[in-house]
Image (cartoon, rainbow, N blue to C red):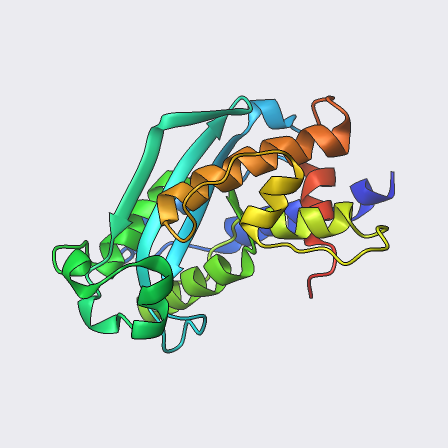
Length: 237
């Protein structure tokens, strides 16, 4: 099939192999690069996925900061709640009144938070060998890229699935206007309402949404990674 002739996941794997770790790089970065990326033809029930969500002080990674990170793992198409983690970052001076009204993160919550570099390395350690999932993933992508560059590290190859783009591809032929924020998309699948703008809650909510989307797209069959990956990239530049 045509998608086998051009496999973007193979391009990411080639990029990983070309990156030669420097001795000065943290062990977590070297370990990330030493682990093969998820294989395009492997069924999703044999892949591990790391679902992430960031709460930030704004949407510009050049001037805004990550305030909290939520993560949870999907293993064999099951959400492992025991894997769930939530971290506040030590960014008390980055809180803005406008975003604090939305995510309820105030400076006092961040005083004893983890350092940004430690949070980044912990995230890379969790993501090693996994597919990384987010809703409107471009936000997390840009913040991770900026963190890597700010720490004098290369932009690492990461396999992303974006539940926002997946939903847009599913709704492409609908005539009526559609909303794509996480809570509204979940409502279309009959999923319960969770408190919004909490990094851990949103990560779990995104994990549940992804499993529903996969079931809808593939009618209950177990798909391979590549067609889902390509679908989640439609419309992205």
